[in-house]
Length: 245
Image 1 (tube, rainbow, N blue to C red):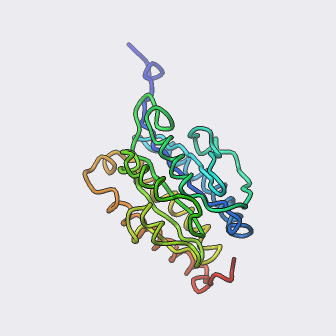
Image 2 (image 1 turned 90 degrees about the vertical axis):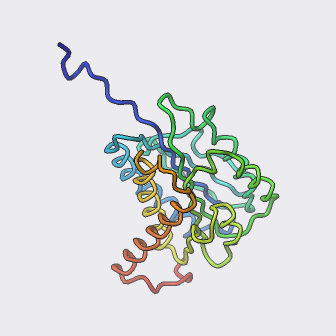
């Protein structure tokens, strides 16, 4: 009779969380610094969520874009396998290049290639300016990608110069674009968005529903905003403004 050690653990599907980060020159200083520290701090929590999920293993993929776009992670990695990245903020804002890179990797033959299969990914986009390249062609091609269509998407408009309209075209709705006005809000939003979307997307009973991904993204964006506001209020920083960069 087989013992407990003879039973192999169930193979879980993979849910990949994509961070798409603007590292153009205008992100220099506190903005990019908060992104770095928030990513470093949230990885342990994401690993715990992954370990505790019976349905999905969480992996991380990080894409930075400025003058061009490049992958910080050559392939998706576990949260505990993510190595801290010190971003260099310089150059322009080539969102179109980022869209093209996403389109290449959102495939079962590339980043979503797993033995057990993949759940629709989560894509979090952070930008503080307007695109400087031919972003429309890159985005239109990306929108034809079936994995992108099915993904949960939230965009973060950092500061007053971010182009909310373009970010909404990426994420699918103005309601899935969250405004970031100070460094503490940015750090908290990265933390809350990472956790809230990962918990949701790593449970098959919710991911496999027929609900429109944009509607799911709207609800999750609302939850991120609410939890961020509550945390800031508790810390008595809710009235801080952009001067706190």
